[in-house]
Image (cartoon, rainbow, N blue to C red; front, side, top):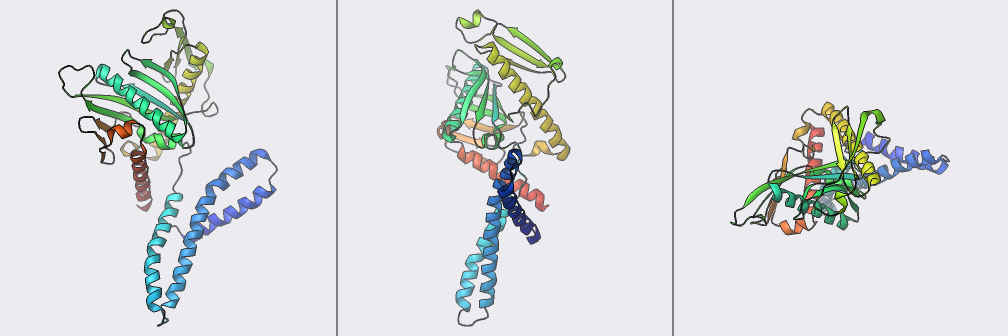
Length: 351
């Protein structure tokens, strides 16, 4: 359990924040104080609940010496102890270090892997799954750039997902997603296996990453796509390459101005992610073994259509709700992944 002295320091800090908020006149400082206060308030409520239960238990312990009330006190104490244990666990979870990027919008990248046209179709299924999940969450989902196929799939697609907790909930989706089904293009009825790669990155802001103009090579070219007159007439596609790292992003929507903005947003986000990866590697040499590490070579999930089965290999969870999940109902999977990550981090603290 967290030491009582630590819990009391947290309570005292909230009191200081309340006093400072009532006296603060500087708008920027007020924002910082309010952010810290809103983060501490629910933790202090859990601490107050815990101390209340402990105090109640202490009173019952005293009553055990009274022969007339001994049995009643013992029964209430038995019911109270599990609640104290649960309150202790709630506090430990609440005090786990927060990912500073959890509140950011997410940049979602889906790319077809092995499997040809079927892999592109599966990529399209994944993009639509995440879009439906975003709709259920009340988030904004916007395709920034895409390379569509004639059959309605995506060779690759990049989307921005904006909303409360977007990155926090989607970050465990990074990795290789595998599908097993009879492709629409298959005439013999054989089951094929193909894959798509998903990457979820916290969206970077301009203040996060400084990019010198001399470090960029910007090229315009004729867009290509599944068809249509526009792509054959205008040089609207934009490819931006960050020369020091070799990171290259191309956007080929209709507006050249839009494509420049999209490409810069993705470049900035990838550089920010690389910066985060290096920092994480310094703190944890075993980062790749962690759930949600974002390792794009890691097979994370299999979607088996013949059996209506979806399996997340990181937590050995199998659900026979494939259509339900593809319709955007990712809650059971995401909740299990978040719980597993929380348990792992608590175990690391205990050890």
